[in-house]
Length: 195
Image 1 (spheres, rainbow, N blue to C red):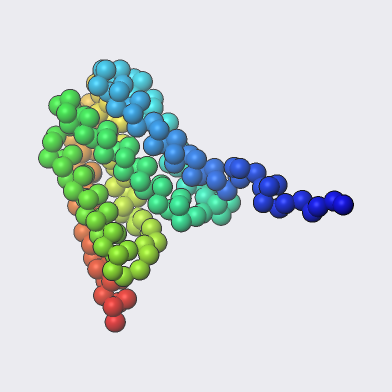
Image 2 (cartoon, helix red, strand yellow; image 1 turned 90 degrees about the vertical axis):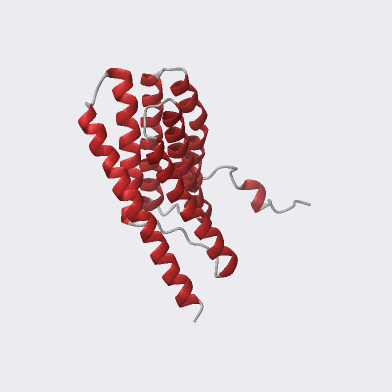
């Protein structure tokens, strides 16, 4: 007597749709080597790793949209990976005296406002569906550009200080605007859901 094959047993452990999530995990794994390279003064290595992490961010987003490999887990993992990477890099650079402490504090405060707002919304209103706004994506790009520029400046002597100043100003403006945008948008959603 033969038994029917178990369909669960035939499923591969990793499917193509999991690739964007695995790329996010890779970005999280890169945080420690980047911090270690910065603390050790290996700026070229740190820049290379940050560049790989930045490219991986674009790649996982492209794959998720192109092949519709989107998931709730991926929607949470992607911003988490971005925040871990950028906050860790900002804090390390601030500790080394290479970026202003106040700018690092602003970046962290923005993330704390967004995360705490999301937790409150999840607990009181409904499950959060991550919806990064355009200005939020712009802020992430500005932060990535700024930390890459700072690391490159100390690793290879370029770009010049004026570029760092402009990139830092872009982080200041986009972090402030995107933080306020999240507060306004999600407060509005909560008010509408409460009616």
